[in-house]
Amino acid sequence: MNELKINDIKGLVSILDYSYFIYIFLIVVIILILVILFLQIIRIFYKRKKSDEQIAYEILEKLDLNNTKDAAYKITKYGRVASTDNRSKRLFFQLEEKLEKYKYKKDVAKFDKDIINEYKRFVDAIDV
Image 1: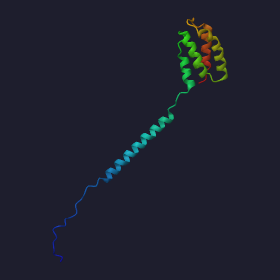
Image 2 (image 1 turned 30 degrees about the vertical axis):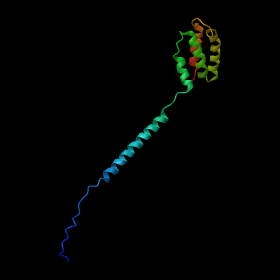
Image 3 (image 1 turned 120 degrees about the vertical axis):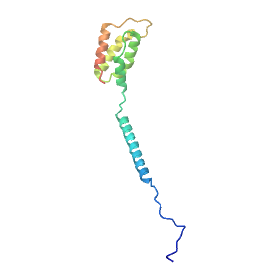
Image 4 (image 1 turned 90 degrees about the horizontal axis):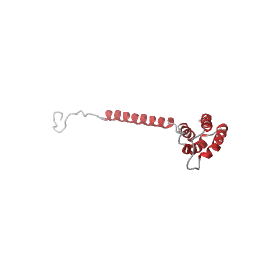
């Protein structure tokens, strides 16, 4: 019986195995996704939003005092938001009283030097 040769059975054939490459590829993709997520989380946490006081302060710093009526309204609107401590609130209320004559009229004159100086003092007093 040992001498019987069977023709249907063939020898072993080597098959290429790609599972190792697929495994490495998946690990690289997962690490890449984790790095991107980590960077996005860091960016979200370190991205600081400006507070309302900071925005109002920037508007007050860049305000054009040549347009008197509009400037008076903006100083009143943004000054109320930007003044947080007692000193800046006191300066704001003094300035607001002087700005009343520049509002609610059709034609208004330019700001006095006194009002401009008080406005600059108020902007310097704001703590942001």
